[in-house]
Image 1 (cartoon, helix red, strand yellow):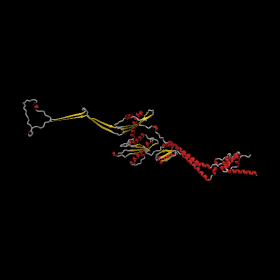
Image 2 (cartoon, one colour):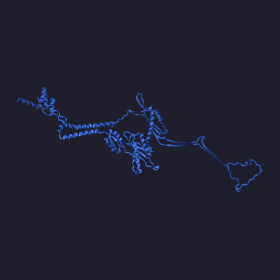
Image 3 (cartoon, one colour):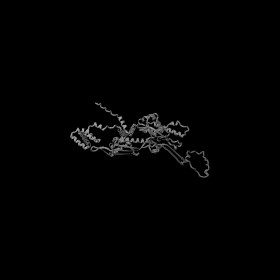
Image 4 (cartoon, helix red, strand yellow):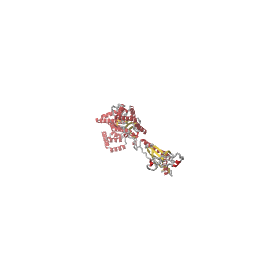
Length: 566
């Protein structure tokens, strides 16, 4: 018995690919190699793009000197970076931004573009007074900027001082002013107390600089503090805050007294206060009439003058001008007392004058009044009250307007709560109306395309989707056709037919597909398995469908029978 031949082992896939590749023409080999190289390059590029880190801002608004020092430090640490905005913005991978800020801060970077008083240490000889003043002003601005940058929320600051030249004339004297630009850190803002602190810091560092002459803005142009005009009607931030506090205090009073009566959601109150910030002083003197009787006498003087000198007497002429003859009296004459006095009449006064001066205490009032700042000049109160709820005859809840008496009651209560004063012009308006039900209001949801979380998720999904799409296109358009071109050839049809059972249906189908004659031995073997009726029906059917095959079969039969006869 002859030895059976051992089956040949199938070739390896690598060997099959090499054999098929060797069968290709040179043009097909070049096209396949180019397609393979393009596919590999595309896949590598997509992979590198997907692995590229996300960059974030390390420092912005960087001076040129600081930018060069920062770039040098990043190169020494082998950190990838990007320079944008003309060198003013340095970007690094987002996952290392915070770490790099701390590392560079330890190296004193960025140092900032401002200079301080070290500018005055190396001055050249022969500088004019103007240059010395300019250098001093620059140094002062730099020192103030450094001090402001020490605040946690401030990343950078610039200070501009306008210091006028001193004048010998008071009429031409001008006051200094200052302007400040702050670069706040991301997500940070300054509190009002911090803004006031920076303003007073600058005003205290410059001689004769008032706090209301300092302007301040942030990097977005938002006004943080502004100069106040002394003769202008505008109020400064402190006064505006005071007005808001006064209005809020009145609103709180109204809420506290109406909450138990109406409910917190059934009314709304607003108060506008007109506050007087004028600084005024007033001095007045008032004199009252003297009381009756006049008891308040300070001093009294009386002067009386009586004149009794005789006038000229006698006969006019020369005789009256001669001296009188001396009189003689007898010594022996007895003296009679009071004789001459009785004979001479008493002189009669010719003029009398009397003067009396009386000084009374005057009732005088001297009043010096200095009005306090922030007095309320006028109040305007607006109050809106919701309709009240009650049940109807069927027990259903409904809202009905308030009566006039109820509205008047609320009006009187609010007047007493806020200290209503009609003389100063206070006004109050109480309106009753139906409120809108908050439950019926439609809440406008944020669209999904505006949601930051959804946007970030879509960006990440789009990256991987693009990567998968590129891989699929490369596989379908490049790799799969290349694999088909180098795939092994299919086995011959005769080998396949050996393993398939032969039936009339298979024979017919194979004859139609291959368009060849049916082998006679196959047809005889198939017909031997059928009965006569089936053979006859199948022969008729086959003759109608494929007359050529039947004619070939009959020829075979006739040729076989002829050979046997010989």
